[in-house]
Image (cartoon, rainbow, N blue to C red):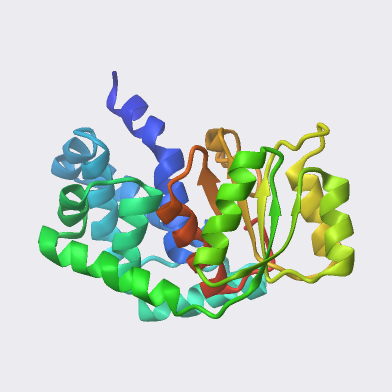
Length: 264
């Protein structure tokens, strides 16, 4: 397999990580692009990113750590979500949140995460524990779960409640979701893409956002279908089957940036 093909296979996931780290699709893509440009200019780095996924993320971390990337599109005004992301970028994302994203959202081992971040494994383990404690201190909110599989819906309900949040309702269809929001105002939405009656979770979210402003986390078994770069992509996207830590991380990110825009 060629170097280009190897890297291309990993790009959707690197872009997902970059977007979660920065809170913005445009900012995340700027760092990914800068990583590839750096590899083109450096033979050693180009060889490194072809060795495997940890090496590609390690190269990305080098660029991310310098933070000398212009992530703002000067030709347009920033929205609320991206402005918040840029403000966070100015101060850099804390290492504990980066460690948590790598070990949960990207499913790297502690050893691989230590390599990516240029830290010791014990230090990474401590960073992850600190991040979990930080998440547990997040303000409680009310969560709407849009999911047509009963077992997954119950799993999400248990997880949300274990984090100290309330569940204002559970919907299996677009109509049910809109009906719940007409009566309740959630502080967060967890939305599946394909719903029971053939309706779309994307359409349900669009309906909800016409009624109120709320951050959204999408859940799907086929994330690559939404990570094409051909259109605006979900800011927060969890892959099925998910780990509880992955959902926990996504909730923290969504509440951290406080976005009412599901796409960026």
